[in-house]
Picture: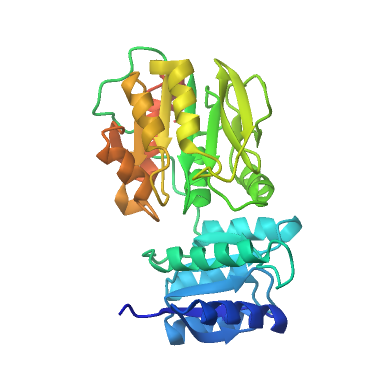
Length: 357
């Protein structure tokens, strides 16, 4: 018989705390090893109890969920699942906590009697189960930014055609990885950048607000039939897939309940392969599951240049591993080397980068 998943629950609302504890205990495969009502107590309990996973509200007294996440990841790295409202400061603070090492953020589970309660509760329990098995590492306190690394050499042949678009996909651990990657590309990057990031429903706006405040490229949500602009980054809106309708034209289509992933990396990569063929670059980064493997295989078959984040720097190596095992990735690289490899494949970007050094 498997050992129960040991959970520390953190919430300053007695009713919300009781709801979550009740859900976990009723599920049968969890053991609630402790509770806390503020961020400082959460850090102390995590250090003392060493739970399998922490389920924590983002809004807490003394230390909020972001500050508590930073301290837990510095002192006793533990998988953390956050729950939060989806608007305003709470949503942006949740994105900061993801960048600091939390693995996932979900809307607060609804109370019994709310129409969405059953779905909310199932999603919450599923996410806590999944994240409890993720191996996390110590996150040090932020220091001064490192200098831009030298351009990474590419061992595989460069594409015969000049790249015209960059398609990127990521999931668990993605917000922090996207920040590092887009910073590495720099403000003068000469291609449109299409981004699929798996995120819980309701949090796309918070991701956009946070990410656009920390990366050098202009960034926004894609719109139907929007003409793509070089150097601009595009995200999928909530409950929509992001893909291409034609060369240089974005498309967004609503997701449906049967979709395995929302938004879908496969759909983005497949449409990129269809409309750009060898004139595209694809990057697949940290994430759970295999989304992107089929689409990146299509890109590779057309001669596109494809990169994946390596296991050592992924929070979860699922998506890059699946793509690499399918032969869809030209080269696996550490997170710090992905931007350099992309820049090295674009003559104009290489010239700009060298001119700035």
